[in-house]
Image (cartoon, rainbow, N blue to C red; front, side, top):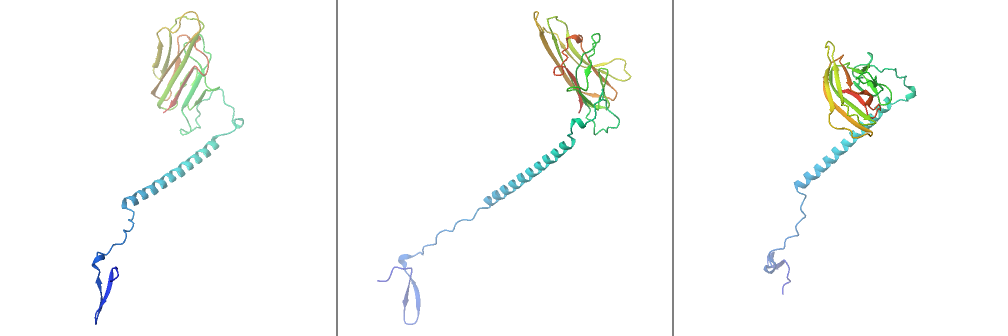
Length: 241
């Protein structure tokens, strides 16, 4: 019996040639080769690499920006003992360029004249300051034309209920105009105190206005003696947008 293999040799007198063994036909194919990565997988891998590169570049740029910002802060920070004494009134000077000016002011409560309805303010002590804006006799004087954000907060208080009107008004006085113009006004018309006990009422107003150089801003109240003279409760300020 012939062996059960794929091919066998049969001879004749002149030639030898392979003959098929029909019992094992067809010839078994080799195992399937592993498939290569598809094109989509290659695209995903490339996108991941690009994303990581962009994220790393953004991190480097951000760290560089923070480093330069810290250097600038260190340059402008100085020992208060080395600073010159602040004058009695901090008024915008001509030697400052427009880029250096902040065009802002924050005034805090100060004891006012009992016979005047216009409030007077502290302009250099505590939280108060002026930069690019002058303060003169209770009014802020605009030194550069533009849009400004204006705010005014007045806290009223009393030892007993008197039912007096509580309101504050911000005026604008322009050169060449005899009468001042009302920019903002807040009125308290409802019952704000009851009985004979201490009370307090806060009023606040703010807005954006176009102001011209030389115009003056000031605040009036009907009863200055009822205003709380604390820098944390009563203030008036502006800054240029």
